[in-house]
Length: 345
Image 1 (cartoon, rainbow, N blue to C red):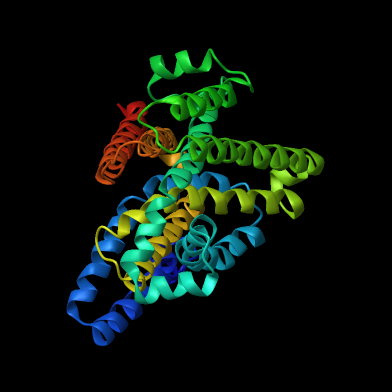
Image 2 (image 1 turned 135 degrees about the horizontal axis):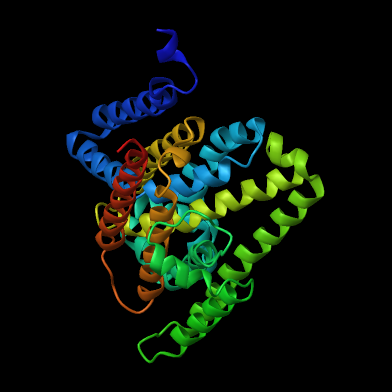
């Protein structure tokens, strides 16, 4: 029993997600009916399935923080993730892009969901450019790092590491964004450039701030985990990272249902389970046990970034990055298990 209640046990880590999910599902069943429950289950399943790469990368970043700041991410952060990024922020996007009042947009979301979805879809180019540039920089900085000792696809990653320089990844992103904006098929050139460059600049600014405050705290921060301004910048980075992963899911959810209450419930449940998975990986040092999982997550991010940027011009099914991510992460888990068995052979 003590082992089951230990802070690192799956039962304790996932218990809140299980209880919260059950309460939400029962509330929808008795309040809105069986069909609404089925749609919520579908949305939650999709969000959980497509959140593995987000959870893995969150775990890597979260492990840098001191315990108190980790707790802040898991409490206040989950409120921001569910209500902020998946409910409030999409409304704010429509307010800014459709030039409507806040109350007007809330009324559209609650009473005219198809029109609300249309306005949100109109902002798709800017959202995809911002998120795509942000995530592309994240992936490129990982693979262009020549100090990284562990490599999964050794030949490919060795080639990447030869281009290790702080300016290479930003240069690639800028050239790609400008190139995409100039393509004849792109009818959102200005949105692509402005949002894309803003996404890249946001990533760079957060990395600079985090690195600066991290150096100021020195080795003490490394041993006990980040605190203070360094932790605050890392926390902000985690929230923007979560937003970059979640935007496309919010828009794609309207393909399942136009009911914003069901969308919020389904995606919110998915966000809860993604956070629980993040906690499980941090507390059980899963990234140390499965050495190639982090590689798989970044390859998945690379695919997602490319899909987001391509979707500015062409309609691409959300199944592509989702299934690709599951396949890549599954392969990285299998490779990690095989690597752990080698010394015993």
